[in-house]
Length: 405
Image (tube, helix red, strand yellow):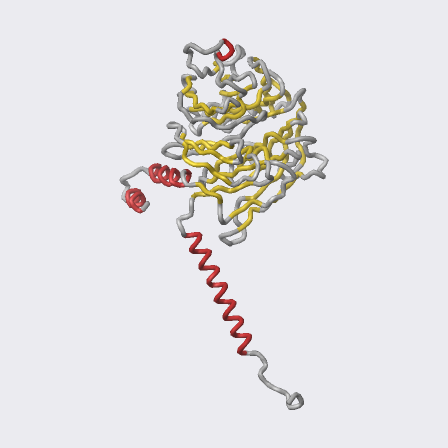
């Protein structure tokens, strides 16, 4: 680190080099935090997490009980060891909560004063954070498995909604109506994601084993259907032009928007080149994934080689190097199945939620500074206690009464 700081100080290296080096070091060394935990206010398993993109301060979560919670990630205690407190809740007693499980939550990309949630009660709700009441609500004919707003859009305010229907729906928050219906899938749509580079590019994954890329400015259908075999000879006719040999239930674009990561119930994960639409054929091995709902995976950013964090069926978060497929680590901590994870881009931390009703914090491995500080605080406290006891003993009454003698 001193070498990079010296080179940065002398103007030899670009500032980006230092940032990428430190980000890579931190992202590769995540472990269960010894100093932080998240206040447990959840009434059921946690299905979805999101960190607000404006301040990167607030953690949003949705549960199977239909409740939604907001935690403030800032340390207000002044202590190294602290608990992240919940500051807002849509509890089970709230008349506005979802009637059934919340499947997806997301902050409004430009303002933490709004957020969105959707679930198995067939509704998409737009919330006012200040009042914790719905500002708008949309009903659909089937379960809403996933929704997503573009993080880079400037010319539209569309929400992509994947539900128990073969039609991908686009809701315009400005007009308050469903403006587009994109047809191309044959079964329920489990996952939707907007590109992090192109505001008009949208990806969707379905129970028909396919992943479609859409340009919402075109009315001629999808741009392309991703093919796991890259146009080569396929084993069966049913597997032609399919991205997976099972349901596609998870996806995420890389920060630069050049690649798309997908996961499926065929226990495989694939990396796609967005410019060509080709499978990069990176082999990540078998990743146990049999869930029949949307799975939230995370991708690191600002690293020399980005990492993929994906929950598996065994209560763990698996960590893979994106372009080599090499397994880096297994993050163990959940007591029941993990459902979702989100990567903090500023601090290279990971937050994960599962059926054990816990949100776990995974932070870069301590270099000893925190532990030394904790020991120092403990030592000072013990010294102060001894001094206090000594003062009490020194000032205690030492006289005796003649009547007692």
